[in-house]
Image (cartoon, rainbow, N blue to C red; front, side, top):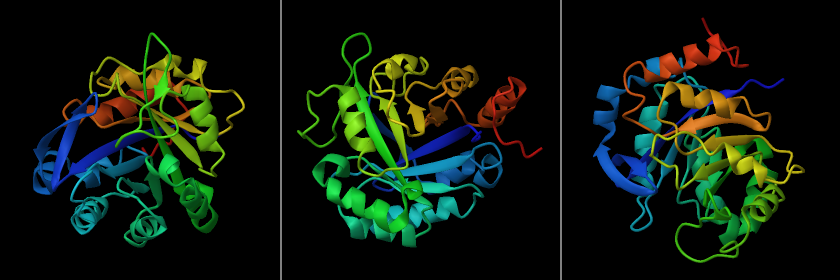
Length: 257
């Protein structure tokens, strides 16, 4: 049985790393700030994967993002996924050439699905993570598309997930906008609306703010990983304590002790 994963996500905006609440971003520090507060050579002992996302929407500086991402990734010994601002195949290719083990695509899923298929065909589905954001907790859950209108606007989340799965991606990161940055815990009910015939690994994100928030998500059979971008909640010993608690609870995770 595949091991479950604890995944840490960094959000990069115009040279600064950010915290996010309901997708509203607040800059907190540059790469030097991050390195002072997070010793990634140590942190990588407690996570299974690092995701670094470029969340710039205007005046995108890909060189700066890649330089910063490479600097951070050089300190870790886990797979690194890079995403954000991937508009065509060449952007994805550049990310791979700059050390990405996989790329994360979101807007491209609806702007140019043919490119998503091309990435999967060239690099393999295992190197491609689809990011699906959604809104709605009590009412119908619907896709949230950054950057404007798209074909999934107003669609049911389940039908959009089925479409995304058909593009050849290897896994789906499914992220609750309403839970993002709240520290209120994951939306475990989202799988009530995800079709059971979508046979892909899912990474669940949005709402993790405490050590005990990881376990309920990782216990779901369809979830292969739980991700957090909560910089302040998991500073210091937060990630090591989380992994220790998960192993103590017999979650099927890799142990390097």
